[in-house]
Length: 263
Image (cartoon, rainbow, N blue to C red; front, side, top):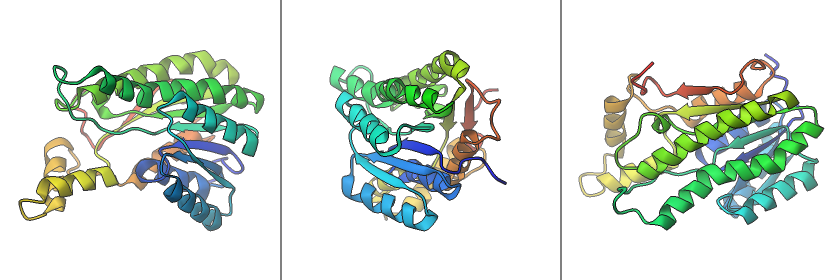
């Protein structure tokens, strides 16, 4: 199936590993040119070069911290300079948290607000005008099932991902008249390097069965009884970017293996 993504320019944050890298790979496989953004410059450059060679597309690696205004500005400028703007923006950069509301300091709240919400705001302000010039585009936000079904140990993550989901909805209403479709994806359990690292740390003193730990998490939370791969989730991102999803506007899609307990 031709998804109509050939020669599109896609900007992906958090693209050096995990979900972001899988989305970059999936879009490149459909012929899209990719701007990969992340903080880890060496790894990012390696992956950008690999994707360009494997899929015969143009790529650019932009080492920046999108939790800062300066990092967002650098990414916007690099996209303008290298490709003349963007057709697709994937706001994927993010990370989990671990705190209580009573003990978490203001600066931790501020950091996650900047990473999960203000990065999306700033990149929209910078890249949506380039989409308008190019005749339209797609913006996707990677939030979380935790935006509506919170886990007790990460209140800051839950709150900022809920805000990202609402930002996605309001941006969709504002820009649909310019042929720019905005949607949000709320994943459930996805086996990323962060999950594996945490599982190894938690099982280091009890035999090191990190796979068993992850299976226990899946058994408890997901009806499907397993984690998704990053590639499984990326397939959904690629579809929503494509011209096969042109009536999908302002929606939030749960890709969570049955983790959400409400309708």
